[in-house]
Image 1 (spheres, helix red, strand yellow):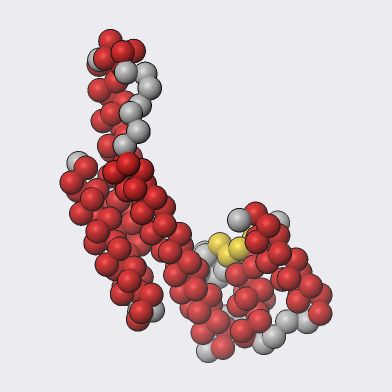
Image 2: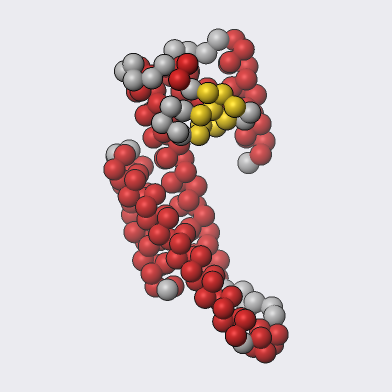
Length: 161
């Protein structure tokens, strides 16, 4: 199972490099699919470890403190970095798709429903408010109130990082 995870992470890294270079939506979809596979493998690995622990409590009580493993730490750090990259590319792809739909007349601003803290799109996408303001900014520009909200949301997001 660990070999599957390592292979999946390696493929995901290659896809992310290609996606960053080309910004091709099909490569992004492949990267997201590979990230989901890696995530599911992590869950299965965790379940297998939990099952082993339940079946061998004497071993677990003896080894209640995990030994630091630089390889595992490195693997986790790589996986988290890749997931951050996938998220950023997916976000950019979503914003572009909605801007094109608005500019092409496929949807209008009235088709979007603003809720508390997010916006529901006509295709059932859930957009964060910063993404919604970015879509509006690219589509028609922002009025003063929207510009102020957008700046405040971006500032809040930067403070949370």
